[in-house]
Length: 53
Image (tube, rainbow, N blue to C red; front, side, top):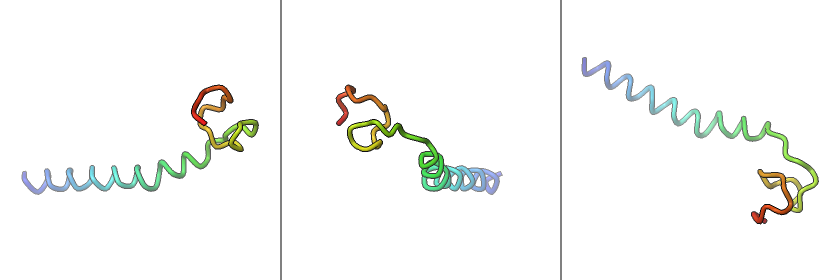
């Protein structure tokens, strides 16, 4: 029983690390940003009056 819990905990930890450092950066890099923003398309909101830049 204890071995199964250790394996589940390890699998969850590895899955979290893969998602955080491998999956999310790949998905974020595929998202297109609008070209017409004031900082060259680097804002995530895509609006020029959002106050984030």
